[in-house]
Image 1: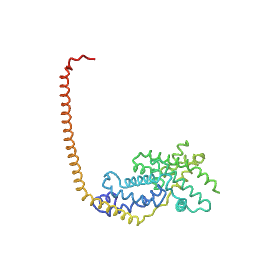
Image 2 (image 1 turned 120 degrees about the vertical axis):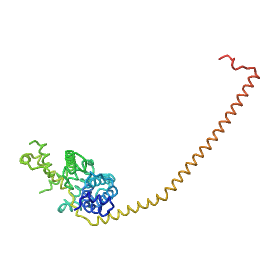
Image 3 (image 1 turned 180 degrees about the vertical axis):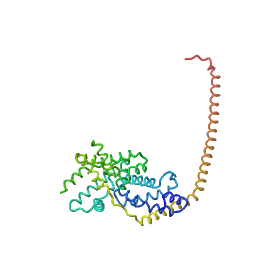
Image 4 (image 1 turned 180 degrees about the horizontal axis):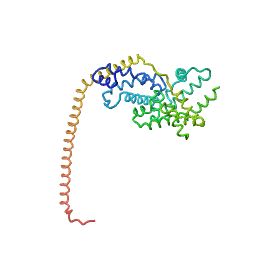
Length: 191
Length: 145
């Protein structure tokens, strides 16, 4: 497999197919990250496209010492953040039906009134995620959605490793505290 | 092991970045609060998880369409720029010349007004001097009030 640096150099020399290889290489992960960030697959697709278009237009600005992957993910983080800010915390949240579909896709199907509960959890999660500061939301989702290591996250975002770890921890504490009542509700329902 | 240390280690283990120490296991066995937090980490992760995306060949097709649209609009802007820039420069030059001419004209007017004013004042002064002579008044010797 050609390294990213070689494809970047080829593209800057005029080889359009080199950039398309980079798109093929990273599109699934970028879409997955955007989905985890925005909690809507359709919007994630648009944001992923925007990410690659921006990379296409700005690749000539990539410094020699900067890894393409880290740079691409930084663009994705910023695009996701811009999209979230655009729609706001209240507006354009996924509907109950969309959340139910997403919950069923992510986890084994549940029955009866637990479907309604799953929808409520999804809406509350979207709302709470949108309420996190950007510098907690991004590292949390890079960890939870993409399984990046603390070191990779720190490198990507330009932070010390300890800072990345602390911010992930704080994001989890905040989410847990906002969603605690839902956790209790689930525990009561369990036989 | 203290709770703060146990929780930090449990988070690292949960994130796949720390060894599972016997000491940690013993603490979690004994401390229900830390055990609950450890379980809550699992619960939160399950909420945040999204399905793993498989590569989508149509993504590249859609990207090409948008890239080509972008190129098309960039080419249109370049076409306009090549034609409009000379016109814009000419219009700007014309506007500048008009303003300068206008300024020059109004400057001449102001000079003419000043001359008229000076002539008018001279006429008034002359009249005052004549009036003084006629009335026998000498302004320079009048006492101060």
